[in-house]
Length: 295
Image (cartoon, rainbow, N blue to C red; front, side):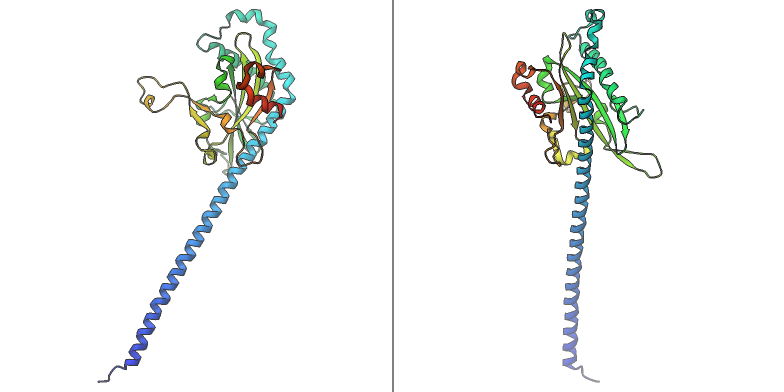
């Protein structure tokens, strides 16, 4: 029986040990490469998400500019239209009661909508008949647009200058709409508010603003600064009463800037009655500053 060569056995041992070390090194390299690929993929995904969010803000700003210039161009017609009520005042003023359970507020809102929306309906976009959405809902080449009108009496000026009521039809909107065609194309949802401040008894128009509320996807950028709980509660028997408010409000004063764009405002002032900022002091300071700067 031949004896095993101790040198040969030693060589096999070292060869086996080398193979183990080589495999370990290769495994570490594979793990390192996998981590690098994963890290690179994550970075590219984040870049794509940031690019998407910036694109949404660019669209929001684009149409905010369009509607601002449209309303400034038609400013005289808008103010003149809002004053047409005075020509037949004797026939409706005796029935006008702004203190009657908010009736006056809703009645004036309806009248103001006729004037404001007549400017938009004949100008930009194709109206959409979807049952869920804002009062004015239409499609443009690269987005779907929601516009709502909010009228506020001067006795509620404290709310008006910082946040505005947002209806359920705005909060339930999708981030994107998907077109039912072979391309399965999507368009982002953009939301705007036209706010009007008026004196409650003579309905004298004091201020008109155009505001842009961030698309829901931008919650990643704006966080909790966009919305706050409203004042209306659920009924006593509703379980949500202890944890939720029935209404919410858009905190426009906290969101004056487009955060992903340079030196662009989310709020534009269409009209401000001469001297009204002096009457209401600091309450209209921000609005007056925006108006003076023509932003």
